[in-house]
Length: 537
Image (cartoon, rainbow, N blue to C red; front, side, top):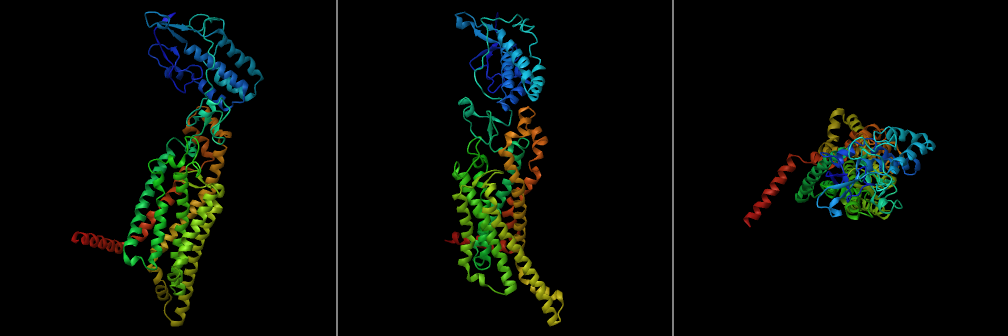
């Protein structure tokens, strides 16, 4: 039979990709295309997805392969261009599917399935035996309408052999090219790939509705940029203004420097978080496979976080010493402050790098891996923050006690004594507020990281053994599987966003607590005088 409606099979990743190459000419009715024809295959794609997931189930795989071969040979009968046969026109000859393609389906999906497990029989029954394309009889016509409205031939026909072994991976899963190229002998990642389908990097994004995580982290990155600007203004002010480079303001200067470095981590991931998160489209970043964007960024994050806590702690300790002991001893111990303030963060950062503990696991930044995060980061950080809290408590208890004592001796009112004793705190209330905000931020993020993220990492590492992967390969879609399945074991989106917002606002908190009218006037005067002097020169 000659007919003119033929074209190349171009649907890369389509349902018939293992049985038709991009070089094959196939027939489809006028007004249709490859995509519209394959959309009528319905549950066959789901059967292929579940077959990929259960690659070791030979009965299911043989049935799905036989049925896919039959459907593709029937829906897309091969064409042979007549011009290749020295014909003077562009007409083509249809090559019908062989009868064996039909009988193979009956044997594989009906006869052999009787020996299959109950689960496999259910899949075959639901997605193949009930399919509109499933052949009921191989003795009649191939189809009831042209161009295949005649009986199956046994010679000069298309046996529709399998050309490749590409898996059927529903989004967000992607194909494991290494698995395909090595004929299933090698995989790209044991953690994130199985049977030719991989969870793409960054893996946590796949467990939430499409683009939800991406949009949320864009918002937190904007906050981090604001933190860079805010902390940068405070740092610049304390560096250029002479009166702010002396004790105790020098402590705020170094705390501002630490917070500025901490907030500057955003520049590693801004506009393109995946360069930090991922070494390849599947493999997450580590300090080994992505030394600059992950290794250096993670080291800076660890160092600056710990340094921030220590220098804010020094501010509170200085307030305590001045209030309780009426001493400026910390002004004389600057060398020791620098050894502690920069030395401890440097030592812990070096340990993290030496033990290869920096990698990507969540959000948009590399950090200490969950298994080592407590010992290398959170325990030291919590010790510092808790120490700050207790210094607060001791200071206030002392104020209360001394106020009561002096009030009784001098017969002055208790409120009057409190006012006098609280004078140092009144002067440094902004620094006090900053330490409180830091305390709250660390506790919230530590609880989130320790409780929620620890479970997330375990889930992601075993993602191919859970209900989520089955849901995805059943064609139900990322949004449905995220809301119905993944939501049972993943942190609430609002919770993780709140945790990220808290840590992203550190520089903003610094600016809001320390930038006041006096600082603005002094900075403005400095800028005016500096540029006026340059103009005169």
